[in-house]
Structures are given as C-alpha cells and as structure tokens.
Length: 422
Ligand code: GLC
Image (cartoon, rainbow, N blue to C red; front, side):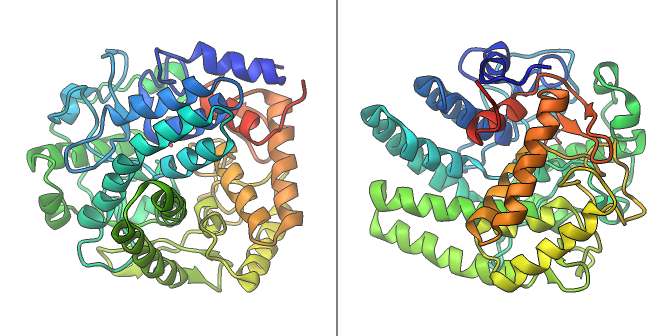
C-alpha cells in the first residue's frame, strides 16, 4: 500500500493539471473548491510556489459578486456530468453556479504562517485577501440576507457532504423532474452501491435547472428555492474561516474591514450555539423552509470544535457521543451516526469516514481541550490510510478503502497532518 510521504507527494503530482489539482483522475476531472484548499496544504509541505498557485487558479473562477464556485471547468472533459452545458453560468473559465464550504481562508492563513519563503507568502496573501473578503461578504449578502448569523446552502452539493441523510427530508420536497437529460458517468468509475441513487440525481439536476432558469441571480434563488438549509459544516467552517480572515485583515486589510469581520464572528458564534442538541450530543442543521431543526447526527455536527465555538461542556458531551459511537464500529469518524437507521457504512456520506473531515474534527478537538479524542481521531485516520492507501473514503466498520483511489485531499491531509513515515 502506498503510505510514505513520497507516495503522498506522487498522488498530488499525478493529479496536477497545471497549477490546479483534480480530486482524482477520471471520476472528478476539474478543480473543486474545498478540495483545493486541502490540496494546497499538502503542496505547502514540499512545494510552496505550487501551493500558492492552487489558490490563484481557484480564484480564476470567482464571480464578479464574490462567489467562488464549487467547480472550475478549466478544460472541458465530456466524461463528467453535469458539465458547463448543464450549469449554464456566464463565467470564463466556465464554472458551476453553487459554492462549497469555505475552507480556503483557513488554508491561506496556514500557508502564509508556515511558509519559508516570506516574500512570496506576503505577496500571495496580500493578493488573496481582498478576494477572500469578497467571497465571505457574498456569503452574508446572498445567503444570510436577513442577518441571522447563519448562512444557508441551496443545494446539497454546497455542503460538500452531498448525500448525507440530513438532507433527505428537505430534499424530498424538490420535485424529481429535471429538464436537462441526465447522463451520469460516476457509476462507470465507481460501484453504484457506493454512489447516490437515480432519484437523488434527478432532484440534484432539477435544482440546477431551476437556478439556471433564474439566471443564477442570488436574490431570485433565495426567493424561489424549495431547498434552504443552515448546515453545520458550512457555518462552522465559515466561522473559522472568518477568524482566519481576521488575522489576514490585521496585516493586509483596513480597520473597517476588521470590525466588519469581528462583528460577523460575534453574530455567527451566537447563532451556532443555537444549533446545539442535548438529545443527540452534537450540533444539528436547521431547515429554513420547514422552520425546524433536522434530526440527523452526522460528522458535520462535531465541526463547531473546528470553529472554536464549543466550550468545555460541549467538548465533553461530544466526546461522550463519539465514545458511544465507537462501540458500534472500528474507526472514527463515521459521516452518519451508526445508531441511525439511515447509516450505511459504504454509501456516500451516509456512513463512511473522510480523512479531511477527520482532520478538521481532530484539529478542532485538539485546539478545544479534547486532547484524548483528538489523538484517537488522528490515529484512526493514520491507520485507515496505512491500511488502504489514499482512498476517497473508508468503511468505518472494516477500514476498507472505498470510492475513487489516489485521492488528492486524502494524500494532502496525510502530509499536512503528519500521518506518514519517511
Ligand atoms: C464529492 C464530494 C465533495 C467533493 C467532490 C470532489 O462530490 O461529496 O465534497 O468536493 O466529490 O472530491
């Protein structure tokens, strides 16, 4: 099994398409937003200019209103569905019309602080700062127009946790009636039993068709969408990203920008706190259409530790939750609670472990006073990778590697988190 530092570097090099890293060859042939943030952290450990280039290429896709899309289609590959012809956005290079969890500012700060080449790091961070600020402002303007402190996702793909059972009920309200023809190619690359169902794809594309018909205008999307959720991962990750943006603002920004970010942090910390669930011992997302919290305990529910908003009592309660979960499985952190009837250890975001999510939860616990559980999560991640290689995700019951192979963000996290020998 490929488990050395050199093997991890080789995965990133093999997935390099000229300044951006594809998540894996075949299945995902473009630049993905949050994948790139993690890939950059991996590159940073052995090739600093290449790490910075990853961000530059991602921001080639940034829209005039600040949105950073979840996919940048630098070079059209007809093997991937849905491609630019389905998204029908107006950007050059072509992009999707939705976004993904905002890990980038956190990655930029980490690269900036750890870089050996200070001149390059200062120049890059200074150039990236206004772009990051524009994106974070877009989140507030487009996705929290009422100023609640929580931003909403309008498509399950925006969560990065595409097929989570947390979206089932809300997504069932989306009529499975796409206008575009569905030409899936994912099931040619990966066993269909690990991928989302046909019904799921119909709804996914029905939403894309609706938003394209609204010309991707954020105000019209906000008004007309049948799917609007305040997700924990998106909000916790954005909160942390704003903490990191504030550090960059102190060096590269104006005082008014610093106050703007600090005020937002104040609001989002209080709003995240409202999502805590005593019954489940994790944070829960909130369905903004039904007006109710979503009863689903998933790995996203622990991410407030990454945001730094969980106090000692919350950290202790979440540790107890994970201790309970470990009785049912071999490796942490499953994407869905193993006691949930919807738990499926091999299917996309309904049970398997993702190394990037473990990285955020593990680091978050380590920084929030949960050293023992942090170490357990880190050790489990290292053991999964040692046993199965740099797979897309892992079965929490058996440790088997699943999905795409030679995956960039798994290799990158192994490098950035120091999980490998040699
Ligand atoms: C899948 C994942 C998403 C990721 C993408 C590329 O769609 O659910 O989080 O960004 O693959 O790896």
